[in-house]
Length: 108
Image 1 (cartoon, helix red, strand yellow):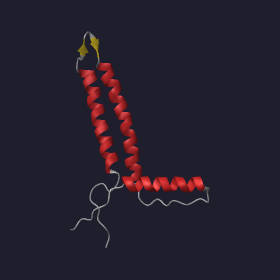
Image 2 (tube, helix red, strand yellow):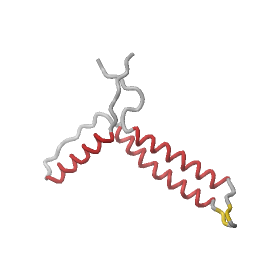
Image 3 (cartoon, helix red, strand yellow):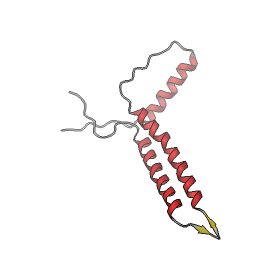
Image 4 (tube, helix red, strand yellow):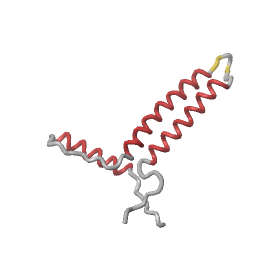
C-alpha cells in the first residue's frame, strides 16, 4: 500500500522562513511608500523600502531551498572522485538529515 503524505512533506522550516520574510518585506515596503515617517525632520520611508526589498531578496533563498528539498525521484550518479567529493557528499547528507523533518502517515 502506498504511503499517503498530507501537506508539504519536506523543508518546512525553509517554507516558513520564506513566507515570513516575504510578509515582513512587503509590509516594510508598503509602510515606507504610504506612511509618512519623519523623525526630527528626516524621512525614513526610503529606509523601509530598501530594507523591505532586502528581506524579499533573502526570502528567495528560502524558496530555492524549499523547492529543491521537495524534488522527488532524482537519481544521483556517483562519480569516482577523490576524498573531497566523498567528504562533501557526507556533509550534505548529514545536513539534509538534520533539516529533514520526519514524515507522518495519515490514516484514512
